[in-house]
Image 1 (spheres, rainbow over the protein chains, first blue to last red):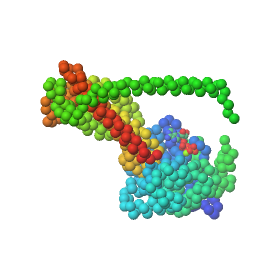
Image 2 (cartoon, chains in turn purple, green):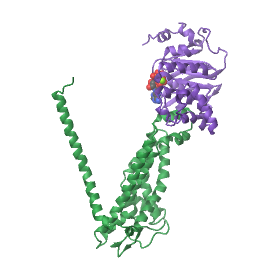
Image 3 (cartoon, rainbow over the protein chains, first blue to last red):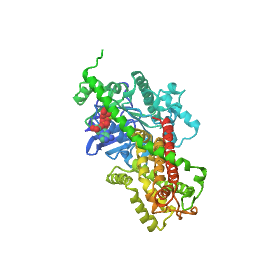
Image 4 (cartoon, chains in turn blue, yellow):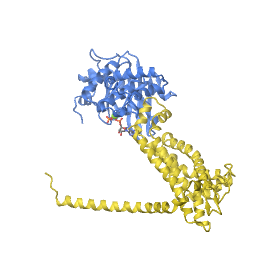
Length: 271
Length: 289
Ligand SMILES: Nc1ncnc2c1ncn2[C@@H]1O[C@H](COP(=O)(O)OP(=O)(O)OP(=O)(O)O)[C@@H](O)[C@H]1O
Ligand SMILES: [Mg+2]
């Protein structure tokens, strides 16, 4: 049924990688359950290389749970159970003997920035260090590059040794983006990154994401419908733990929807 | 703008009365401590000298110093910690960071908390049964310090676990999301941020262990020994037991002697506690969130 949904009218000039693009992730019948309570059921979708895939939907829709399942975070939460398949370049990540390998390929940015209790520099150097980069020279290069790409370098280059948690909220959010980039991920997942960020910084980060798209695949969970419109090549609407509709962003936002609820949600007439 | 109504005034009065009540309670609490300390210092200070600390007891323990007892206490505590600290910290790390949240873990946690509340005389009897008799260590330093270790273990575990759990879960999740293993997360983030609490717990534990009498009385502490122990299989004197002995068991002890012993024991405990507080303050200054 979801396969039908995927064949919504294809979009305008800015549409991302086309249907033939290689698939980074294939999600098949994904379900997430916390204890006895289902948070996500029957989600099937594909994510293409170098696209920004937007996920919108009201609170409680299971968006965060989706990201957690893709990252195998259920291993750290004994109440969380995942069913279905997540194929990374055709490989089921459940079967990877080394879950750290999948997490190193996928960078995550949480809604509320969590600065590790380390300096700005060490926050960004953390991931390279744990994968074995140890020389100061290499780390310096990585730290500067990641901070630049997260549009933070100019603001912190003189205080790399201060604690990450002493930065302002918006700066911390960009620090977590820099940290996610320091993993050199192939997929970057952002969960409502703009919650703690002012509009100007949000715009700067959005510009960064458009750049990053050429190097990696981005999954963007957002509460701001217009943010999905601005950034996403394709957008999925999650509703009550299901993937309600998937389509090219331009098509969805110009009213080519399969379900009336999608149009209502996009136009803010929901609930 | 704001005028006090009669209700405000009454609330204010009530609040002042309660404050006074709590203040009086606090003073009542401090009073006995002050009296004990004053008494100890006034009566015990004349006994204290370098010779008192470094000489053997003489004339049937009615004169001389406390050297073997002092050394014995230091020995027993150090050895007990040698066993209980590594074991306790490792167990706490497992329970807090690795163990799945299931009924077995919960039972273990409950058992540990209960173990911490077991009276020390019970630990003493366990020590006699297990170390003195079953393992055949005899009444010895080894048996006594193992008994002390068993007694301190639950407290070390609880203190460590609490310090570990004070580190926000969000830090762990952020590390895991970066692809860090559990151990990398523990070593680079969790331990550095909980070490102050762990060490404080351990030091407080030392001061408690130093004063314990029951667990060592039957397992390795001697009434009187005219020589120092030569190995861990020998018995040793200990301050706490020595105090008990000179205060109640030996006739014709001059008044200042037991007070002197008590002062030294309390002094050790106070120094340890002060160290622990100083340490905590120092490390808290460096706290990173
Ligand atoms: N760690 C957890 N333990 C138990 N239940 C959870 C956990 N995380 C999420 N849930 C439950 O799963 C359901 C879906 O939550 P989820 O966080 O995936 O929603 P969301 O779409 O991200 O919502 P929001 O837009 O508010 O972030 C909710 O009912 C929530 O209570
Ligand atoms: Mg969410």
